[in-house]
Length: 347
Image (cartoon, rainbow, N blue to C red; front, side, top):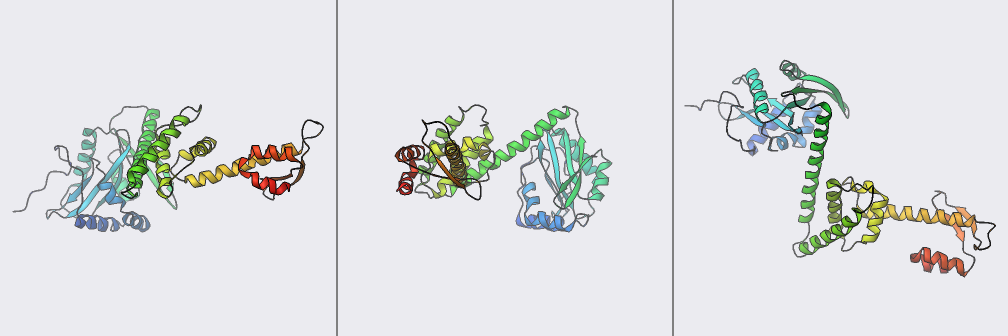
């Protein structure tokens, strides 16, 4: 005798364990997704190729469900993720259109269950016009149209519980996305540490921590410099990536470079080597500007005369001749790493 199905897949129950799909279930989910003809084929192929439906189903959201038929086979799924504090985003919904479950009853149960789980608002992007019309009957309202590359989709919302003013809701939503990004950065940091060889991992981690503490304490003292949770984890991640292929790093130069380019630690894109190159270019440009100003000095005998020669094609550098030993001494003090070159020019 076959096991009877629950009244709905959202019947009241104790805390449900996060979904962990078998390979057969994953294949069924992929096939169901590819078979939703109401959605553009390019989008269907994309979400299947990057496994995003399966990743979303396994993200631990309490609203996620597999719809099983009487034989225990996957005939549909509901995949959600948190969109903000107490907000859920219905990211994917797909079925084989087999008989055996009552769609209106399932939707009603879904809305009640979401409310019981503490959600005050639900939203989704309407890629499926047939589903859009069905959900509109249950109070989902079109808010705007979002464009994503060559595609566009209407964004729908339904308020389950009136609670916060729009300004507070938007703030919560931003905070939720920020926390999601920070969680991703922490995962990337752990993955980076895992790439170090076992025999020197401890030493590398110590170097990263000491470098981070050195820089962090100095950056924190800078006025009007944003150095919050995001900036700290990004700095630590970039240090870890740097020490994957390097054994040392000049903390003084790195500090100057970060203060000069504060946006560098606002995103995980870009390496320390690239930052150093940018810093060197900006430093040389500043030196060139000072030299040019000196070269134009006239009418004051206490200054040594400078002769301006020409600018480079880029306009970033300026050539000037050193006439005498005082010139060489001043330039050597200003650019202590270029003393040999300066002597060669003078000779």
